[in-house]
Image 1 (cartoon, rainbow over the protein chains, first blue to last red):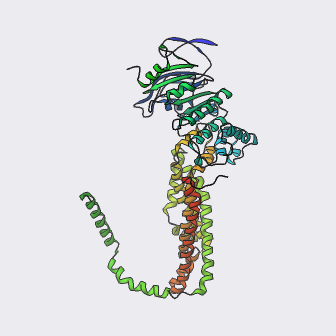
Image 2: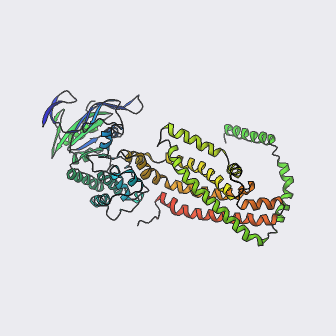
Image 3: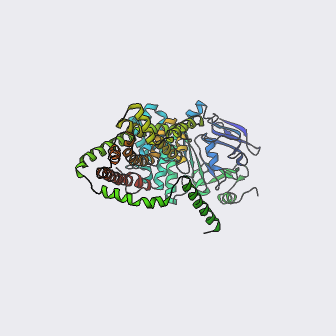
Length: 276
Length: 261
């Protein structure tokens, strides 16, 4: 089903109503004086592999935190699967169970094993007694082991998280998110510190999971080339503003504001703010 | 050394001199009293080995008191520390719990021992209760500080899944602060053994009871046997603590030589 909607630059475009993330004129501030994000409009289709690109301090990590309800906007509205993020809203709280979030630091519990870290993703499906006694049902343990095999960590189930390499830690973080049976996967610069080969392995792993589980993957990068390689759509954030949003279909890149562009022109725009 | 530093050091030295004068801390009296120390040492050298079995048994009793006090005290302190941590609770929860813990810490273990001797009578039980109270006050404080120092990233990542607070404590807070807790328990046990050794002063049992009585009756040779046993026990416990720290704390924190199953 398609319909006409107003976009940021007041033009009209044909977009699907099956939006999993909708942001309208969103502003956020950490100190109530300066804004980390200013007037962001964004809508993301269900099942998209979406990338948010920008340099350090541009506000892209903040944008991701708004999507899992860890931050509340100072102004504007956000809807995640048509629900406003609010920790006190039972419906959203339940929704959080299926939003996989991988922060830049990965957020692994370093003193527990790989298997235990991954089983954390299943905690919302356990009752209090089961979780306090660490009594995971057999089918959850089998599911965790299946995901461990999927991310290429078989044989390392009992290793403590701090003993793993950088690439292995990222695989554990992805596995924990997949264990949530997510509908949305948010990942913040997950490959930024990795070598080229490992970065591509991790990105392929997420792309496979995204297709297999039909989830919406929203990934923050500072490498535009990597974003263009893996994402269907890329938003470029600079100084808290969305300066560009492009769709990627095979070799074709389409900018919704200025028309067709090639990769070189996109890279040039990313390096130099087109507003200047 | 800058002039400012010299002034600060001068002020500190002046304060020490004034305070010493106020409390009659006279170094000349110390020097004059040294010959008395020599007499005590000389008498202590007349060690009476036949008291070694009694001293060992008294030390064993002391260690048991410290062990019970440390374990029970830690078991009470652990949940209290969860309620006292600012990063897990609202101020309406952590502020009263912290006030309670501060009140418990106000009294040294010897004062708790006097209180419990009045309550339950002379003997080791009063000593155990005193050690429990002291351990609760200190382990809870050290532990809530350790919890507040936990890296916020795993807390945020796991919270974002929408888990309950109990699940967050079970799967993030306890594992991430466990090495601190083990370190604190070892320190507390070491400290409690030494503390329990002096609780006998107020009739709360343990090896201190023998030491204080022999000293009262000027039987320094007998007291020396018990004091040497305390020294040996403390050194042994310290050695064991170092081994445990090396194996479970230092290496795990630095990722050294901890083999995977």
